[in-house]
Amino acid sequence: MTKAKPIIIKIAPDQIDFFGAVLNCAVRYCLGRMTYMPGLVTDWIMQHCHGILTRKTLGVMKRDIDEAKERDRLGMDCDVRTWEKFRDWLDKEDAQDGTAD
Image (cartoon, rainbow, N blue to C red; front, side):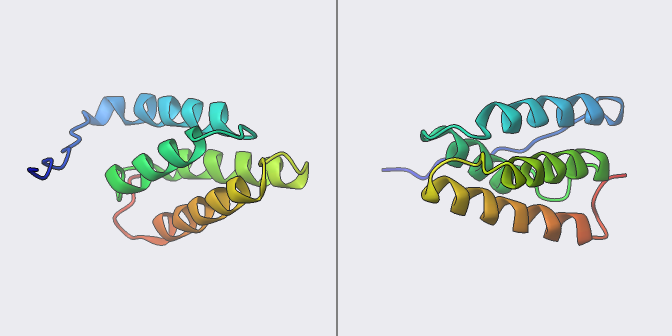
């Protein structure tokens, strides 16, 4: 079996906010779902979006996760672990110097 080639994401500077909004929609769709979808979306973002998300996008994702957690709406225990892992990744991304502004 051959290994798949990594995806290279190239986003025009004037489209980065739009891209972030689409990812925020995907995250919001997944919040509270008790299916495979939270893991699929968060894993994809962590694998393909290192260093390209704006602080605005990161902040919206973190806020949405925090609000869902406060309301106990992250899903089952396995989903909570998925969101906690993703939330930690968002913090690390936000601390990176290379994160888009």
